[in-house]
Length: 356
Image (cartoon, rainbow, N blue to C red):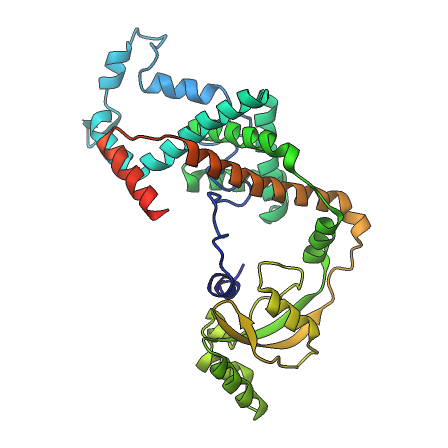
């Protein structure tokens, strides 16, 4: 999505749909990151059960098998060295808690709430369920991330993990969390024929190449229309008047598919009625007005719905799952009674709550 489209959506039709806990391409939310085993950084195989065990051993919650090191000495051992000086876990904790404590606390709260929901629903998570989430992530990145081979898709997974700070422990936990959510919402997913047709139109249908000018008032929009009628160039007027980010490009926005509900409905309706080269009247949007010019229409791929039905049905199902999973996560987190007792963690949690 280009910045111009984001501008139209956020300024003209935002209803708080941008982020309901989801933050990523495939699963979003604190769900982001289906896990895999580590081998010098990130590997291909799933790592569902061993990641947490290795973490416990590292922080001294278990007695190590080699060298007789006990839990107490493990906790007091340096966690890092800077020019030979050891930094203890106690020294690191306050900063770590402030930096990321709320995110981790939210993840763990959701883990606990989901486990309760699974038990209440009589569902049981298997290792295969968690492995499937890893496979879904890789396939999604291969299809949508521009990867041409499995190796390229795997590199995208590794890069995604690095950007999100998803090591073996968090990856394993997030993988299980995603799988539990998908299981809990499965019965509510409804794949309709109209949804499949819309998905086909979005992916393979016609796209309208257009220019856009947005204004705050109707009077300004009418003045724009008058200037264009007198022969002024659309691009120049857009650069001088438009409040949309596309003004710097003479009003050019990315091609609009009239089935794409992320664009305002009034804008899509206007475009569908224009001929190439024609300018619309003033279009009322949520926070102002727009004038649009149709440059032309791309015919689409020509691929018939029947040829891609199975693929589209899967896309529609996963999109519904993501929305339902986000709603479930939101509801469970609102029900979770979280109290941060540690000062650093408490600061992080209070600030996150305030900003959200």
